[in-house]
Amino acid sequence: MSAELAFNRSVDVVYGVAEAVAPGVRRIVANNPSPYTFLGTNTYVVGSGSVAVIDPGPADEAHLAAIVEALRGERVTHILITHSHRDHCDGALPLQAMLGGEIVAYGPTGTTRGVSTPDLDDAFVDGAFKPDRPVEDGDTVKADGFALDVLHMPGHAPDHLCFALVGKRTVFTGDHVMGWNTTVIAPPEGNMADFLASLEKLAQRNDKIFLPGHGGHIQTPQRVVRAYIMHRRWREQSILSCVDNGVGTIPRIVAKLYGGLDADLKQAAALSVLAHLEYLIARDLVVAEGAHDRLSAFFVRAASEPSS
Ligand SMILES: [Zn+2]
Image (cartoon, helix red, strand yellow):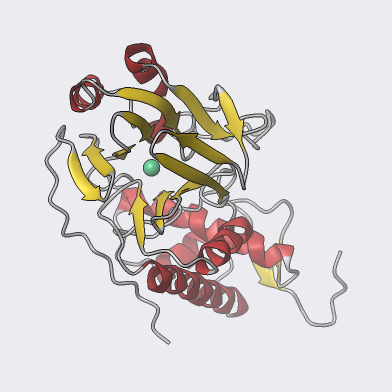
């Protein structure tokens, strides 16, 4: 079975300009391109007159100025954050200082990471991020002219939310589902079991369009979600068969499965393999030598071996 995903990378972007991307939705792209952010972070504006801003993006002066310019004469009621990674949330406080609006993100504590995660990457994650209004799965954020249902979709990040525009079959998917690449699932921030459960949750819905945190919109959302799930299952099988054949360390698995990858993406691939292995370990399909981390050796659990 081939599970290569077809990505849409043909997106035309003019930085700093608000562009209508769906009925009642404008997008402004931040100029922070990278191997992880594609062309940059998408900031969305929902509604007109009274508006919500979804993911203000990085604390980049030109980007914040572009948002302010686009919203001249309008009132920001909410600043919604899909997850507290810096390329999505760092602009929240500066934007609020300029335009107001209540900062809304996952709660009750603002994060599910707790304080005991020493290897969180500070360059990517704002561990101290706190919303004005914490929300949970099933909540709705309302203002004049629009309502957004809150969907808790952990996996890429424990606090990851998607927002469904009520009555429009439109979902802002953040980094949970993107059209240009697969999402990075990097422990301890990322969790493969959660990610797959969150994909299954999206697969149960009947949406028409996804507006992701990076890259262009997705017009065949159900097909993309199912392809994502297939792709992860196929990847898991490849990893399991590596381990089964004695290719039992992460560097060797990465070399075998991701041969042609850029060096700076190999680190992400290593973490993704670790996420798959953690999920295999959780289901007693694989065992690790000692504490399982990037340096462990992994073995397929023998059928007769009792599970611990
Ligand atoms: Zn992102």
